[in-house]
Amino acid sequence: MSELLPPGDRPDQEAAVSDGEFAPEPVLPEPVRQRITALAAAALPGLPADEMPAQMRKVARFAPNRRARLGGREIAAQLAADPLFRQRISGRVVTDTGDLGAAVASGMAPAAADPVEVAALAYLARPDGWRELVDAAGHAVLAEADSAASAAQLRDAEQRAARAEHDRAVAKVEADKLRDELARVREELGQLREESRATAKALREAQAAQKRASDLLATEKGRASRIAADHDAEVRRLKTRLAEAEALAATGKAAAKDARAADDARLWLLIETIGQAASGLRRELALNPADKMPADYVADASADRPGTPERSQARAQDTDDPGRLDQLLALPRAHLIVDGYNVTKRGFAEMSLEQQRKRLVTGLGGIAAQTGDEVTVVFDGAERVHGLPPAPRGVRVLFSRKGDTADELIRQLVRGEPAGRPIVVISSDREVADGVRRHGAYPMGADSLLRRLSRS
Image 1 (tube, helix red, strand yellow):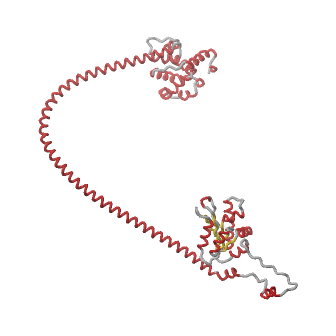
Image 2 (cartoon, rainbow, N blue to C red):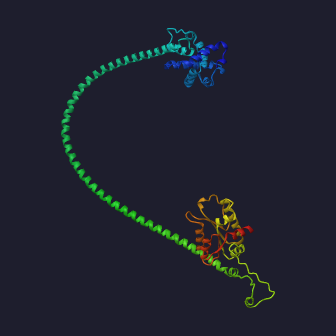
């Protein structure tokens, strides 16, 4: 901070800084604090911008009549915290206040000067003994305040004495009036006592009658309340029975509607199946061309055939043969039901579950488009699936509910179909295969579908 001033001013600055560092700021009387703020606010615009702290530049731009009022707190804080700023302000203030400022800056306080003005100038200029000047101003302000308070108390006491004298005169007049009024009131009181006795007697009779009426009313209210309570209970009971009846009727209607819809679906599928039964049964019961004629069987059993090569036996189609799957899907109105995760974990277990489902459902969409058959794929656990894309046309994607498995859902789907409809179930789970076979479905292994998908 001292580097900003000429060399001749540095000792004073260092003394001011040293004084501010080791002696606490005095407690200023309110009038002295306000006068310091007013003097600093008036002198603030006279400082060059480079000698003014950054926070004071905004205050310096205030209007003169608003500067001390709006920026007083910031000015006081800066004066207390920044000795260099206070020294610059004090130079301006001492110059503006003329002889009084010069006298205070030299450590002399004129006897006739205002103590508040002297204390404010001493605080800013900080001459030797400035704290005593501030304390003297504080004592003078307190003494002046005490004197003013004593004078005010004296004036108040004189006013109270005058009012008391006036009140005594008024009270004497009022006392005479009250004595006359008291005599008149006593006379009226006697009359009122007589009237009060008569009124009290009538009141007692009215109260007795009111009590009898109240008792009768309470009795009637209790009876009415009991009747209302019984009526409300009966209404609630009837409403409950009505709600139960309506719920039962709605349940019955819904059950009948669902049953009728299921029966209609089964009947429609059965009729569609029967309508195409001829060609379907031909394909279903077709036998491969016979390798041996009846005479061949007799010859094999009873004679030798020199030079006749041994016939090879026809290879049976197993549950993993995609050709057998193609034959079943060619049946009319066939329904293909797929155990989803059983197939995906055998065919592409290295993928994530989401990718497994997407690949399987996409492949089944191609089969549905080629064959026109109904296709249903069943997965476990719908609560763990998020963001499943829409299923292709002709493919139904189902998830078992919480507490159920895909195996049980597959068995329910098979039991829900009408007897005689071709149902093909893809699962390598032996328990699933045995269960659906008992209900007339055709179980096929997961490999048959995987091979069929690999051909697409």
